[in-house]
Image 1 (cartoon, helix red, strand yellow):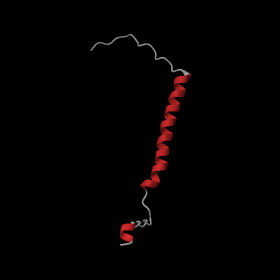
Image 2: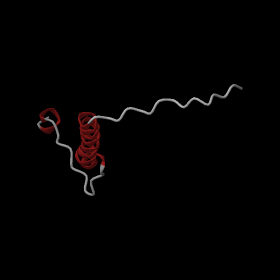
Image 3: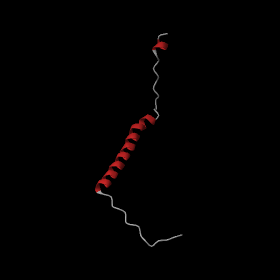
Image 4: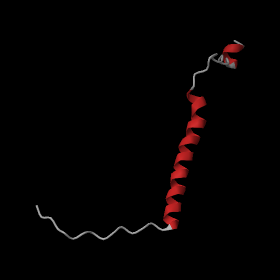
Length: 62
């Protein structure tokens, strides 16, 4: 195995715009997941008292 004593160049630092963009993207993703969880939780929860189904007019009057 060949080993070199040459060090790679240092990584370029991210600009302020790139850092802000990453933060904004991360914040958007987290808020989207939190919103989906908040809006989806009532749909997934089981009701304690199940609602009675409405009868259609066809079975009601005949």
